[in-house]
Amino acid sequence: MFKHFTVFLLLPLISFLLSTSSHGADLQSPRYRMEVSDIDINLKQQLSFYTIESRFGPNWQDFYELQGYIVKSPPDSLKVSLSQNLINLGEIKPTKGFTNATSLTLLESPKKGYQAYIIQLYPLKNAKGDIISASECADNRQKCNISLAKPWISNTAYGFGYNQSGPNSPSDFKNSTYFRPLPNENRGDFPNFLYSSAGKNVSEQTKIIFKVNPPDFLAGTFETVVNFIVLPNY
Image (cartoon, rainbow, N blue to C red):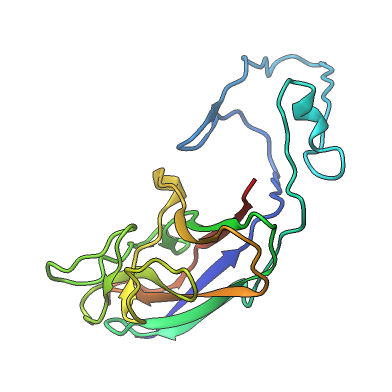
């Protein structure tokens, strides 16, 4: 049976929250929790006033400076691009790994350099909630983890992972057969370090290859979101 898997890769800039209904719920993640006081849903009329402030634009640092923070801006620009922000792994068969790639390119970077990271928002899953787990790269003792790449050659080693190549890539990615599983934000993982630069480097590029090898009992359209994070040095 053929199976179709789709991987969405996003370079996060602004997030939007869309809602078609109203209900009460705690807002939380592995790193924070927001709570509000009780709301009387039987109250017929109630007026509430809110102030919405932007954290973007030329006045973004005013909010923090008024609270006593010292805000430093990078002396020059930071521009990045992805060769693909939507990766489709197509129709794939079980017990055979399929790959597709994207390249992260630093078009302009600050004089003091930058750091680049990667993290998966949630596991590769379909609409029914079936999950393709993070790869362990092998069905023997040579298992990989989010901090250590190992060869992924076995057709019976299932999962989803990534390979990295390019200047300043971690040394455990010895060649294109070495993979790591992605860190998972919903599980509480921190982003994985991709590479960094202590000085100004224009048009520096790293290539990320994503690989999936599904078990034969799963079918459907699977998707996930992978965030690339690039931070300037101060």
